[in-house]
Every structure is written in structure tokens, then in C-alpha cells.
Image (cartoon, rainbow, N blue to C red):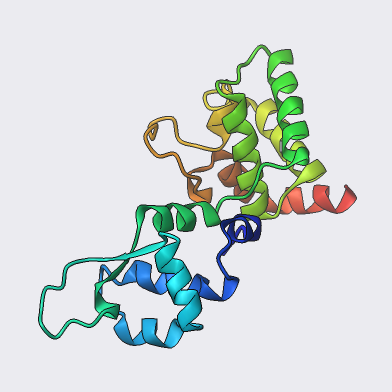
Length: 195
């Protein structure tokens, strides 16, 4: 599981409260009152989450409901959790993106969205731990593979299924590049050892 600690620190939330936020996130599906009570680091940090707009309460449905059973993440809190599993786009991803764009242009292929491509490269590298020269080699092999011609005309399609245009996140399982790597894992293991 990847957690973007830069995003967490920028939010100003004490990292020890991450468990509390995750537990409150599950509270809408099932009563997590006992776990919430155990996850509270201090009354002060709990109040900071409330006053910072990270958590909110819903109307009680039963008289027996406690304050903990009515806790929910606010929109701000849900956004934070969503952003925590996304890697920041670093300089290496930007350089690799520029190289991929040139690679595709040389082969008379296209890149639809350069900003999204940089983000996809960053996500792929953080989730698969294939980065820098290894990722460049993998992409070059993918692009040059004649059996893959249908899917490698547009660079962004390496990382997503074009039929799934409404999903904006990143799932390794949807990545054509990941499937390509897995089918040839023995070959790429040997190639990566030399890099």
C-alpha cells in the first residue's frame, strides 16, 4: 500500500491520526465506534480534525447512537484519503514524460494529454517500483512490439483501458504496460539486472 506522506504532512494532520481517519471512513458502512474510540490519539487532535473540517457528524438514527457512531469524513477528509494513494509527479517523471513524447513522435504516434501522462508515469513507478531506466526500457519494448500495435498508438493507453474513460484514478490491473511486463517477466528481470 502506497501512502503519499508529502500530501499527509501538507494537510497538517498528525500522521498518528491517519488510522482514525481510515476508521471513520469505514464508519458509514458499519459501526466502528469501538475502533474509533481506540484510535483517538488525544482529545486535542480529535478536536483539530473537527475544527479543521476533516470530519463531521450525521444525524443520529437511534437513541443508543454515540457520538462515535455518527462520525463521518467530510468532503475534505474524503479528498485527502483519495489523494494519499497518489504519488507526486517528480522531476524524473517529467523527464521520462518528455522522452516518451519524443519516442511517440518519432514513430508517428501521439500523446493525448502530457500532464496526465506524467501523472501516470509517476503512479506506475510508485506502485510497481519499476522506475527510471527500467521503466524507459519497458516502455520502449512495449512501443516497438508489433503485436501491440493496436494499443500503443496513443501513449496514455499504456496505462489505462480506453473504454474506461470516466475512471480518473490509477489501477495497476488496468495498465496494458503492466500486463505486457508480467507476460515477459523473465525477460525483463534479466534486462533490468544489466541496467
